[in-house]
Length: 94
Image (cartoon, rainbow, N blue to C red; front, side):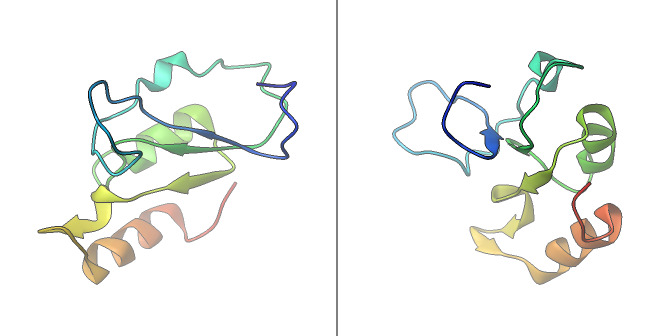
């Protein structure tokens, strides 16, 4: 990943058998992210929601987060859930 010609990385969950990218709600195995050695800033995605976002971001220290289904209700973006995530994360990247 360090040799890719990009400025930042997006680390996301692989959902086998899915013909879509992202928004599956499947939680990524964040233990696969090395504690050291990732030089490029990275975003995380995969099953993030208000109940796990704090623990995960404190564990892997991402540059940013990408949340899709974790802020939806019945398939639509939910303003209440968005505000909750913003409050938990402080509305900023680290």
